[in-house]
Structure formats: structure tokens, C-alpha cells
Image (tube, rainbow, N blue to C red; front, side, top):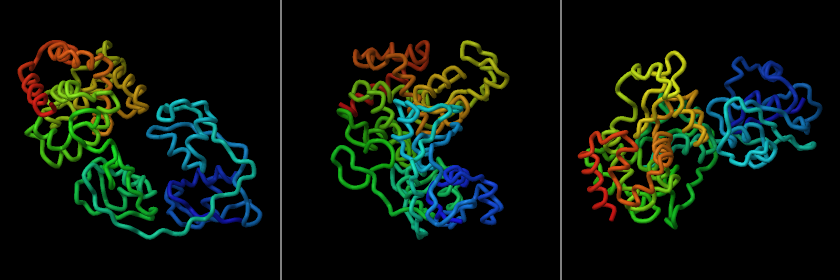
Length: 373
């Protein structure tokens, strides 16, 4: 019987698959009562193997994509690489996989098991502006759920600048790569906030000048996600950024509302929104700074962004997703071209279906132009 030392990201099912055994056998051999609970550094006895040098099963296995999965996460859990997994499944865009998709997990030819990892000490980290829990987890080689559990965090999307976090059994801290030549660790996700001209997004000061009722804390929380979404959608000139931010400011009350206040029941049965199943109105109510509404829009946005929003509609209210859906909506209506032409009225019409709140939108637009130019 050989042994294996649990590494960050491992699951009992993945280890069992790699060694050609079952979860039940592995749990029984190690006295594990809860197969979902193993810890980094834990030594496992592998049943049915001969000698300490036994290798994982070769020839590959299969895996069905579940809600919330990413290709990199699947690769890590199965002891392979994202590129190898993409190649084995003819995936051209590693960021786009779908729930229910069957993946072939490439197996090595007699490849040896990963070297046992030593138990890692607990570390501490202070949350900085732009941090997300998932980003911190990735940089320390742990998982979001483990980090949330270790710090009694009930909402993984809500952390605050200055908060002290305990890092359970992670790797040594890896600073984020510099963006745009700026030294030091930048935000975990999205480009480093920079002046508003060119492709660098907007700075914290510029954002709060455009949206004066936006608090410092919320601006710090949202800015990296906003800048990332604008960069992704090519909203990268003063004219485009001014038009985009003006519409978002009006639609969301300066990011006060990331989810529609109404229940969504009014959308029930709206076939034009793709709401064909009971409960779709409430399930697919407006979310995000430009409210994404209706099953068909959630499906389209999710497919475009590589996120299963149809089965996880509430994700559209989270800033890391909400700003991307707003940028997707923007590009789906070719609004950069109207922003380039200075046709803000047409931008408004294509977002609103009319000119509701035009005076408010134009006030934000004029303020944004003066700040960004």
C-alpha cells in the first residue's frame, strides 16, 4: 500500500480516480467519515497499490463539467495542466466550458504520482484595495471555500480593505504581476487603476468625481472589476468611458443597486425575454449595473462570457460578473460606435428603449467628459 500527501485543490474523488480506486475504498482505508473533508498535507493510504512508488492510473479518465467549474480548476484537481486538458478536448478558448460537457482527462504513461507535499504553515494576509477572496486564494495556493471557512466568511464576495485573513495551509504569497509597468503588487483581478486617457481604465479619484455619491469603500471594491470589464469590451477612450459610466451611474444609482428592487414577478411568462418556465420572472430579474433581465439574456451573456448564468443567475449581481455583463450588453448593441460619434441620445435609446431619465444621464455624461478629458 502506497501513500499520498494531499495537496492544495485535491479532492478525494480526484485522488481516487488518479490511482484507479474508489472514494469509498479510499475513505475506508484512511478512516475518513466525511469524503468531502480532507486537509492539505494529510497523508493518505492508497488501497490496492503495491509499493510506495505506485503510479496513478494511466490512460486518462473522463469528467462532467459542473456549475462553477473552470478548466484550470479541473486541471489542478486531476493533476494535469490547463493546456493539456484543452488540447485533449479540442477546446480553443480555455475560458469557455459548459455545464454537462464531457471532458477527457489526459493520463500519463506510467507517470509517477506528484511528490508528497509537506504540511504548510498557517499564514496571515491583510486585504488590500482591489482584492477578491478568489484572487487571494489563488495567489496563496488554496481555495475560496477553504479561505472563507477559515475566516468565518458567509459571503465570499464581501471582504473589506484592511481585513485580516488567516490563510489555511497555503503556498508562499505570490504577488500579482505588474500591470502597465507599475511596480509592486496590484489588484488581484483587473488592470491597475490608471488615469482615464487611453486604455488604462479610470482611477479611483476619477470614478468618485463622476459618481460623487459613491462611497470610498464601494469604489475600491468595484473599481478593479469595472476597469477589467471596460478593457475587455474595448471601452478604452474618454468618449466611450464617459458614455458607459454615465449610463451605469444612472441605471444603478451610482452602483447602489446591483439587483432590481422589484421581485421580478412582472416578467413572468415574458416569452420575448425567454421566460418560458414557471418562476423565470423572479429567477431572471434584473441584475448588474445595466440590469440583465430574462432567461434568454442570461443565457446569451453567460455563453459569451464563459459563465453558466442560466443555472446561477444570482452571479450576475456580483461585481466580478455584473460589470462584465454590462460591458457585454454594451457591445451587443454596438454602443462604442455611437459613443465615438458623440451620439449619447442614441446610446440612451438603445439601452433604455426610449429616453427615460435622459437629463440625469446627460448630467453624468457631461461630468464624465470633463473628468476624463
